Image (tube, rainbow, N blue to C red):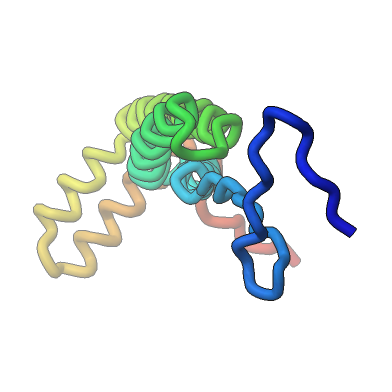
Length: 157
């Protein structure tokens, strides 16, 4: 049963959909792809920071994608703003950790005579006896400096 519209109001439009059912407009969901990609690269950076290159490379990608995703989320054209900020923090932290790890590793390498070992093996060329002497000198230097035995001692019977 239909009622007439109240006085002064126009009649309602008929339902435009098929079968007389109304069609509702719904806003499409905002994509979070950029934020998800930033978070994935940030996690990869955290997992590979001790390789130095992996931490810096993946961290840099995570930071760039995180900045883009954060800007899009603030404009309202994309979702995942929190994910993007987390990716920024993790990516930057992994880059800093990779740099610190690299500096520490380089210092230990220099202090332990690693560069001298490489120079010695380069001068030795393909001579296996000379390379073995280089290895023995390097192992002895590690034992003397750090008290670390690189080769296990012979068992005594």
